[in-house]
Image (cartoon, rainbow, N blue to C red; front, side, top):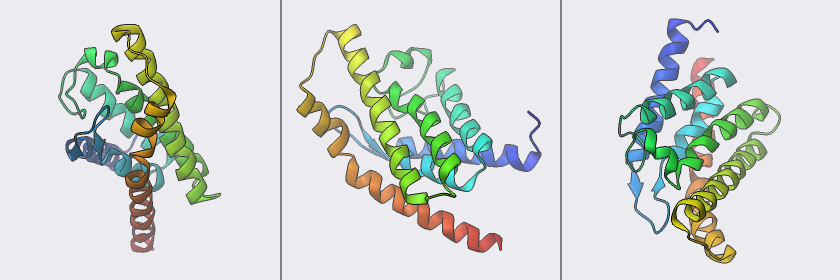
Length: 172
């Protein structure tokens, strides 16, 4: 894949924005609330698909090599963190949103959020059970890993869509 200097700069910029979003957080019971979702959605909307996905992959790789840019640190051992599934889900959500944003921006971002929740929750449950022997009731997980985040993530999607539309107007 050949990438221009402009595209490489955009990938680096959005990787940095996602990292900054990880540090703007509200500690919560199981998973911290961050602004990463805002920048994940914005990258999927603003960048072409391959660049948006690459920006998320670069962010994850930088964190895995040891830079503490995830919400709770960094390093290769982060793959054993219950929240790592959310990071992986960002790749799939970004791909989906980027692929379908032209058809219906609202539905694509909503499904992108559902991808994040579904994959993130499954990984969380898997790691908690396998590594820690913890089992949670489904209603507890639904509340603490979905409902609590829903209002903020809806707001993040709305802000990202507004930002995307403003960027489109500036480009014209």
